[in-house]
Length: 112
Image (tube, rainbow, N blue to C red):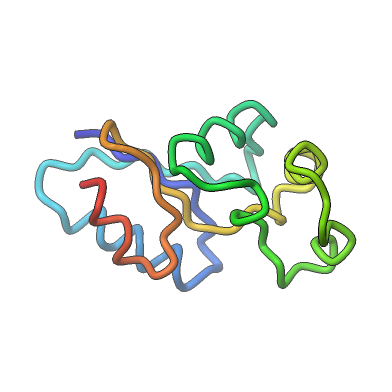
């Protein structure tokens, strides 16, 4: 099975999720460093839909840019994430079984 992780190597939770994927037999891991190769607005919307979560739930609230988005619409949040991908909470993992935000990292096991 293929697993794609939207990864930030500077993030401990992202590194933990990647370690879980790499230690799982039968998983082919694709690592997307989303800060270097930002996803499109459509890709962001699609992974949140697959995960069953709203863009607001996927917003990295600790970032300065997120403060201005408090109470914003999903469309405004998606636009902001596409313009500044640091606003995307990580790690996001997608497999054929679904998508999960890896907070905590063990949540990704639900789709392996």
